[in-house]
Length: 94
Image (cartoon, rainbow, N blue to C red; front, side, top):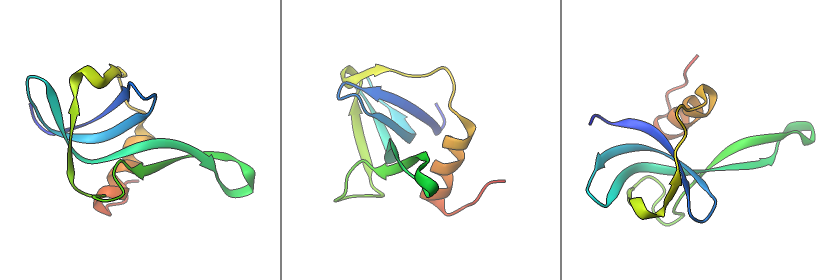
């Protein structure tokens, strides 16, 4: 499996987006995982924001146990994926 960006709904109810760098029998290794959150934006509009999964290791890898995953979408919203790429690499996509 090559590295790919995936979204997981975990048992705590959070959605996590990350680059999956490897998959083991019981867990995924996630690169720069982010929690997808809804927050007030400009003009009081609600907007999606990405928050590092760990404040103590914002750009490190993390293991996500497969038994902690509730669901995974068939596809990822392109804006969300582009926002993740921009936040974690500094590359802005058109």
